[in-house]
Image (cartoon, rainbow, N blue to C red; front, side, top):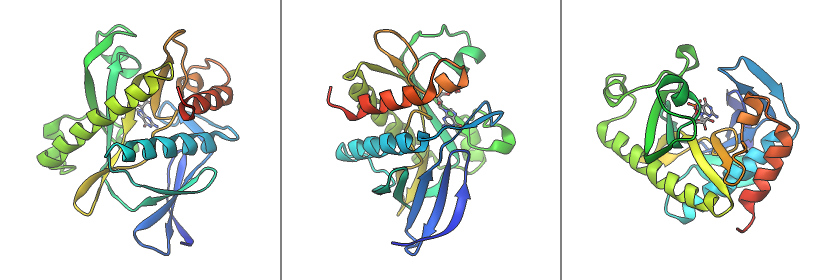
Length: 236
Ligand code: 5GP
């Protein structure tokens, strides 16, 4: 498989076509952004850690029957993925109240959310990722009711699998964001699941082990990413 032209470049990843129309190459860059792109930096090695963790999580999910876009790792920071027809939704599952829902609603930071809460945002920089509801998703033609049911069911399954896995490694999965696409008529998990897209707290100390370290200047971002990648990839 040969890398061809650049198809898309986002805030932290670039996607390239290949000589196989069904396969794309996804490069995890060292760029990191927060607050709708207002805060930006480049942190050497970040892309590699996010690719490593995403790869590991995609493989773990596949082993547990979840369909993902992951095909193979090419080199550190670079993976081959299936060409999905992406659905522009940011599907967030929340197990503990933190981040934007604490700012927007009367939740206490750290309050458990049982059952988990699914929040779906419209992935659109131009509109600043506004929150959607089911009717808006249908009215905008983003997904059918059957697809949305499937997306929510998959999101909850993935949440259970990941929460259990991380819990054994002393990490609370506070919340995380997923993106889905269509492939041969099926809903498939795409994008990444990494320290950039999960909110992770150490179970004992409550310290942040994710992009919040960057967002809120809570410590050394690369040290945190390196440590958490090691914890996620190691046996409990
Ligand atoms: P919040 O709504 O509290 O800002 O984010 C909830 C969760 O979704 C966090 O784990 C956060 O990292 C993730 N998330 C929300 N929006 C985005 C986004 O645009 N990009 C990425 N990578 N993660 C996001």
